[in-house]
Length: 292
Ligand code: ADP
Image (cartoon, rainbow, N blue to C red; front, side, top):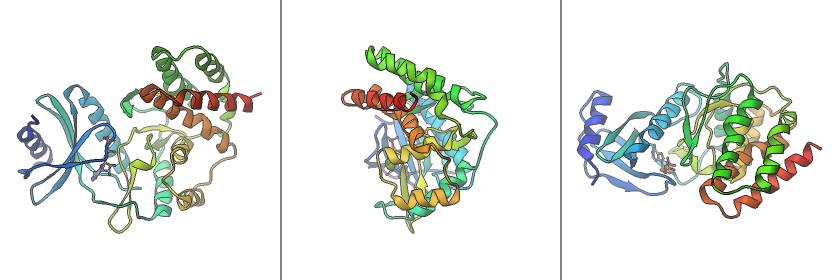
């Protein structure tokens, strides 16, 4: 049984005002968490729930939403609070009514470019988070190549080894780890990234305003966000052309895109197994062929 009273009390404390919602309305569509809408007639909040020991996942999500909101570039749901209630953890955030996929894709491209203009000194972030339900380490690095090697590809490859994917994947993957640095010749800046920007994490509010949510934020090469928008589709040609009008992509993106998307395919291998093994191996082979 969910302790709705405790959740409502924590929301009231965090927001400094009373909150006495009616019956929670269940929302479908999430990949990881249970979601409900809580509404007290004054405020509607979107609340995601999971096991109590996953509260740090929600804390990192709230921090990511706050980090993106602070850039004032693209709309994200404003986080209200996170907490533990009985055997569950939760995150509460602004509810945004998302219309059925219709919106201004070009504006989404321009606004994402504006968010990517927000940079920091170092790659990574000051906290770890999750990508899907997989841990995502963000230890800060001065150098993007070593960040991508240690915190991204190397981490997922090692996890794949522990999941039983040894042999060719590890051998070819290891070669790629040693050599992929030659593909990164564009001197990327540490941009604020959404980090998990597949089509399911972009929506449009009423009136067509773009909204991104469910982030796995860190500071990294902006091409990593762009690459993921192409991996599973859902963004539209106007999105990309508007992004590039605002901030053109350097030469070599088409190859690096594979390097960046390999991270997500390895993560899918670790989460779901199956056909992602041959997809990951094919990507590694093509990248090694580029490096010959
Ligand atoms: P999960 O973490 O389980 O993947 P998501 O954060 O992707 O869940 O949310 C699931 C769905 O709920 C989204 O696809 C979106 O349609 C909707 N949604 C997400 N955030 C909000 C929000 N703040 N307000 C209203 N609807 C939302």
